Image 1 (cartoon, rainbow, N blue to C red):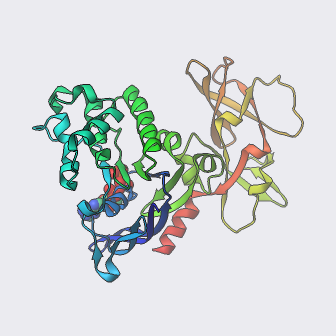
Image 2: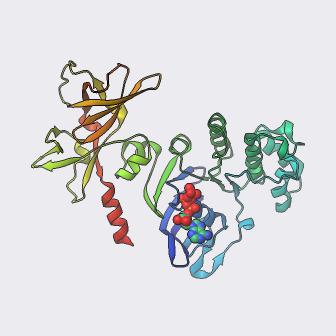
Image 3: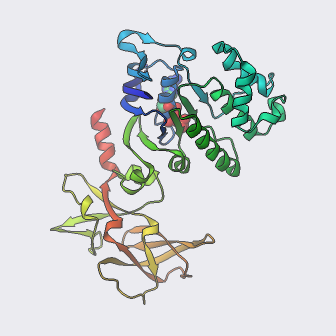
Amino acid sequence: MGIAVRNLVKSYGALTVIHAISFDVADGEFVTLLGPSGCGKTTTLRCIAGLETPTGGSIAINGETVSDPATNLFVPPHERDLGMVFQSYAVWPHLTVAENVAFPLTVKGERDVAAGVNWALDIVGMGKLAKRRPSELSGGQQQRVALARAIAARPRLLLFDEPLSNLDARLRDRTRLEISRIQRELKVPALYVTHDQTEALSMSDRIIVMETGRIVQEGTPRDLYQQPVNRFVADFIGNANFLHVQRVGREWQLENGSPISVDPATDRDDGRSKIALLRPEAIRLDETSSPNVAGQNRLTGRVVGGMYLGPHVEYIVEVGADRLRAYSRSALAPGSPAILSFDARDCRLVDDMAQTEARLQHAG
Ligand SMILES: Nc1ncnc2c1ncn2[C@@H]1O[C@H](COP(=O)(O)OP(=O)(O)OP(=O)(O)O)[C@@H](O)[C@H]1O
């Protein structure tokens, strides 16, 4: 049950934009495709919807293959039984809210269209505005109509392509919660495309991070935040500091020669070049008089800037050749020395990005 994508390839002429990716979305699961602009998220989603013709690989929905170029199989979009919500609300301006939502029910040949419309509008909280036209609605309300239309025919799969991009920040937060609630209520698998890490972290059961048409890592939001496989994922999800480190004998050192203890679980000698990831919230930032805590890394840096954010000040601190972001409630003057303390387990070695790029180039 759910979606099974196997070795999906999409090329436009000589240009391949999806390179044989495979993933699943289990029944009732909320999975997000996350990655920078142009990495192939939308193309993947559109292949599943049947709005693009894949070049290779297969796609199955609830065990039924809907696309497999090797056997010339291609089920058209309207026969795939899925609901889709786009960035542009794509509601029809000449139809009322109720008529918009009725459309998929009519196409499906449902007998009690009115009941289906009421059900869907109730779920998105738009029952009272059924007779309005889209021009009489706010952006957020129009997106709710689009959502109601996507779920009205009780599809076996929900697809979302950056559905919150056109909403302002507050409405985005609210609609995010609504989408999560509705998907869990309906218990249908959902695939959600975004380049916004907050959306991905807050809504997903699982996140698939993509880079240039390939999957770099997939896992729960917590896995990806706490155990990113490389610099690209660490940088894309959450705030990240990177320390340039080198192995000297059995220890790791910063470029200025200071020794540094790293998470032993990440200290693998696999021949790949490494960089140390240190999240800002793992750093304790003090004035130089702070006491030494046994077993902690303790680096001396220099404050180069600070930004007051209310709950804390976000400082930029120079440590050797690296600039790190760290938070503190104390007021530290620019130019003043500071001590950065952190647990070795919070300092993880990850593959450096240059390595990923090299691998991608090698893989063609
Ligand atoms: N019709 C097309 N012809 C040629 N190239 C295309 C076509 N559609 C998309 N591409 C290319 O495919 C790649 C992936 O595009 P896609 O829209 O899937 O990326 P995305 O990750 O969804 O980006 P965004 O977040 O900007 O929408 C891009 O390099 C894009 O230029």
